[in-house]
Image (cartoon, rainbow, N blue to C red; front, side, top):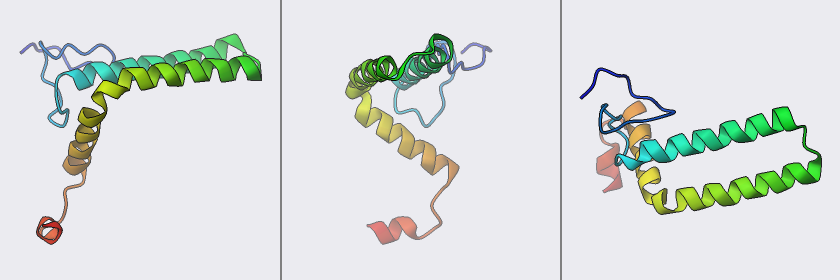
Length: 100
């Protein structure tokens, strides 16, 4: 692996170590696309000063595109979120036994 740090904006998972809670190497790339889409949306709002109807149309296109991008990764994203949550806030001992 490279000494380069893991980049959330432009991940290169084949050269850097990805976070353990990512379900697979694709998650880093999916999340970087979502981050780009959020940056685009914020910049469009800020710089284009769109009126309400144009802003709604842009938001609708954005949400449709986001749904298309995320749909194939829905399960992997959910599993990654669960793993992240578990790594940040581990369950107290005995909770796993209660669930079984």
